[in-house]
Length: 165
Image (cartoon, rainbow, N blue to C red; front, side, top):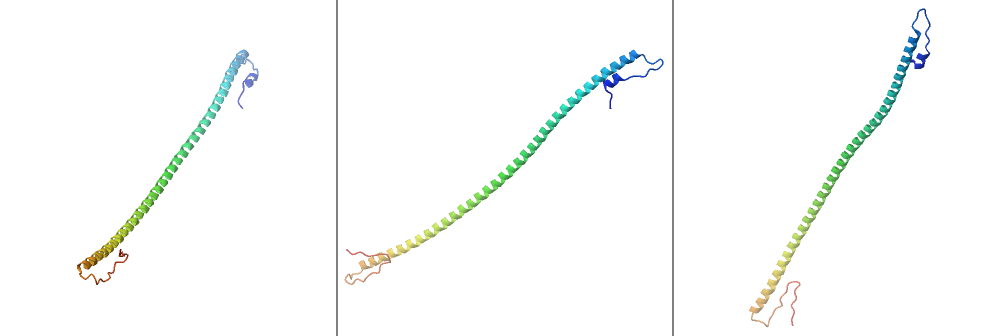
């Protein structure tokens, strides 16, 4: 255990024949006590300062750890957001491609149907044209024929009726 100023103050020396001058020794011990007390106070002050600084250091280390964790979390969150955005973009592109394919297929289907309808209309037009030609030719044939009395019934194309007034 280290000496205290009180230990120094209470220290008694044995007296010897022709020993040290008691006043000088006491004076020196008083000076040592004062210096030792100031060193102890200074040490206590430094220990308090060290404790406060260590407390602040711990506080700043905690802040540093928190900031580092926050940075890591922010980086991870950023990466996750980026991954999610990439996934979402891929899904949007796939959906757009599906819609485009569907629209193209619908357009092709409608185009084929329109083409088939056009062909059917062309066939019907040719049939009607042929029937009309046959009707006109039959009428011309009747006009050329001098025998009006012996008229033979003309067979009209399907869907046509001859109206007599």
